[in-house]
Length: 265
Image 1: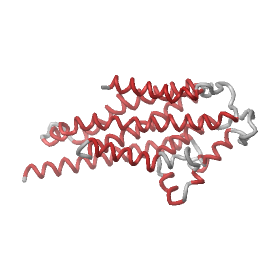
Image 2: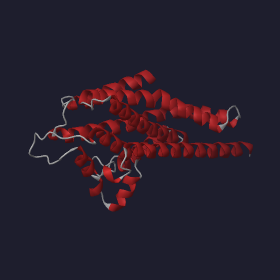
Image 3: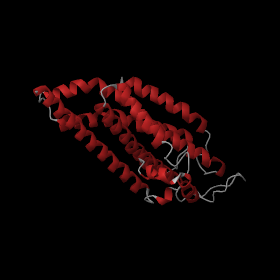
Image 4: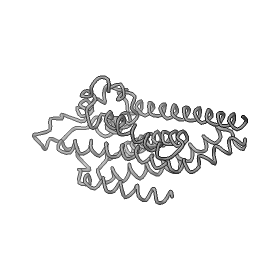
């Protein structure tokens, strides 16, 4: 299953990266700023969304895992920790490598190794959050349809619209801005945009684009009003990962104890 999943994911990455393969690898052109923002949106969104494929895998193991914990073969934290490591190593790690290096290898990334390393690190952390959320839903819901519906609903109605890429954060209505500032996808996109545009000059080759430099792009998207640091943004995503993991463990522990009490009665 892992090979099929990663193979299909690789095909999807190549498919959505092809329109951006003509971007200039040496200079940051004003006419290509929107394309680079679009590639960031596609990369971050696909990395996050592909975690949904983890839910059927977790669902197939769910009954067995709960049975083993009920019988006392494993402690709850041991099972949940092993599942967390599994999805991070088997899915988050290769998916982030495939998506980031293939997408930006075709689209044109900054020429220093440090930018590539940070870009992949950001992609991995964002993917890890998506995987931990999928694990939480997979362990909580009884059937796969409900779990996947919940994941898709949150992704489509909150994460994507409030990412700051489709709509600039300053243009989002105030009540919805609360979700923007609590949105890990937004922090991941901000880190990627800052990593690409910070401190770069823009070659003006279009009269329709008015960005003065890379920092002006960051300011337009509202990503300078967050932590102001790409490292700080990633730390927020890491905190969100830990919170989701702890919530998933606590929920699983509660469901196991509830099931055990039901069996005793």
